[in-house]
Image (tube, rainbow, N blue to C red; front, top):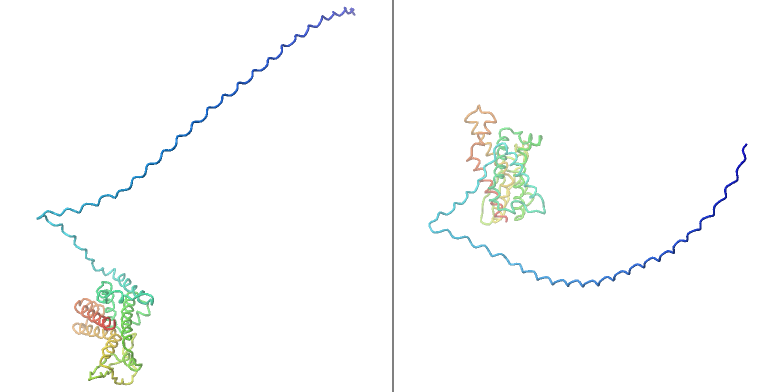
Length: 306
């Protein structure tokens, strides 16, 4: 192997250069003092609100010059009578008004409104017309009322009950003016006719007639004892006869309907029951006469027992 030569000598290390001294950092400039804030200007006082002034009153309308035509007033609309299809609705409306009469906390219809005005309403007249039609049918068929009760009829039963209720209310008004002895009251209820024989200080009352069933209006088959005679004061006799007329009004009207149907059947014996009823209900003067008698009876009770 070849011999290793001598190692070269290391040169002298260079001298370290001294670092320059660090310069002192410049001092931060002092912050400039903030100028003092300027005082806010004082709020100006609000101006007082102006008072509201009322608008001037409108000027009255100028009078029309002389000779100028006056404007014609609009004619009032006259309500037409309900057609036959709506008749059932009118009857229900009239019957529903009886709710206020039956309530003890409310005044009855007759007490709130004069009787003449109540009777002249269209609903009342329609209801009375249906009432008469039911009595005409009963005159031709004795089982009519019982059949209506069994089927709970909605066309004839409400008017019948309404009219019966009005008559009972007026009977109560009469009893507030005069007291009835039980024997006299029973006789007045049983016999549909009443004879009054006036005297100097007393009036003799004789109940007569054939007793009948109040519900079906058919005559009673059983015998009833003969009624006795009653003597009452002259001043009170009117109230007794009025009470009797109110109690038997339905039966008396039924007899008048029976007379009318008999007269029609006498003219044409071949007419059926429906045709007879229609002829009765087309007889407007006869219907108005019945309604007038009903109105007069209630007016008497209303005025004499007020």
